[in-house]
Image (tube, rainbow, N blue to C red):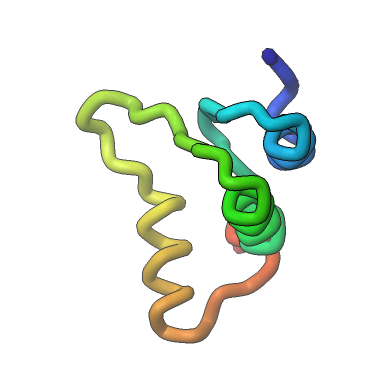
Length: 81
């Protein structure tokens, strides 16, 4: 299924509910809440959800989210300046 970026999270959840495995291209989600809901749907419906890997280019936003999460400073909008 191809969707606009802002539909990735909801389409992923709907696909999991429908019993489908999901391959998501970046951006996977726009904030931590969307990401946790996608993970929860994947676990609840026992579906595999994977993201596109863009070669060897590092994903700065993903690293920033992971660092904030580990430090307990994750916020809802990781793109806020």
